[in-house]
Length: 149
Image (cartoon, rainbow, N blue to C red):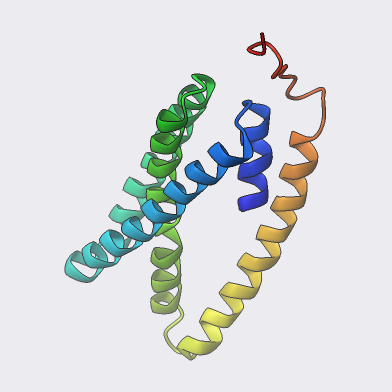
């Protein structure tokens, strides 16, 4: 995830220091989102409803993130990526919890292991694909030298 965020922010002309600040906010808000999501999941056990809410919030935060990153403001970018992290990272624990519940006869360790292997392979594949797409000049062409006097 970090490599994709770094390449994505480079195309929006953020420096390495700014990228680290924004990425830190993404991770911190993701931890907070995971805790909030776990508390709500334990309290209400409404898997489907919570999944739909989180999915909707992810879509909204992705659109907001695009516009916030285009401003070039580090703090707005951090807020946008933080909101996305709050929603995206929190869905991981929700998915594992739901997956273990629906595959009840199988052991929890076996189910979780299969889901982790699948998620890891998919994540590696998506990281390679997104990196390749972001490095194509035909998709994103940004000139970061406009602000240099």
